[in-house]
Length: 112
Image (cartoon, rainbow, N blue to C red; front, side, top):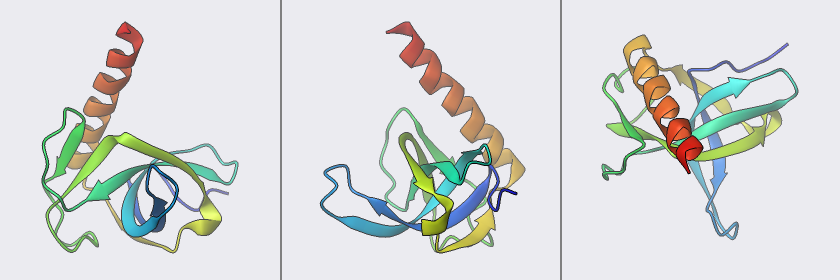
């Protein structure tokens, strides 16, 4: 049985892209098909502009310490065992924004 579900915000040690460092940070569970791995997107408090960043409007009260964005183009597949804990669940309106942006990302990939 899956422990984590799409929309869950979890705390993990997320690797940098060079794989030399890791940083403990929140991540958003995007997919769990029940095979002990989950697909997650990085969450950051840095308010930078990128085409596939999604502002979390309802960040207060869901376990995040500051205004944050989900970086839909910064994905990782991780084992459920390395998740330290679930810290919250994304509000429905923010989840809809994540889904719309994820569709745009994959439509952009498909065009290439």
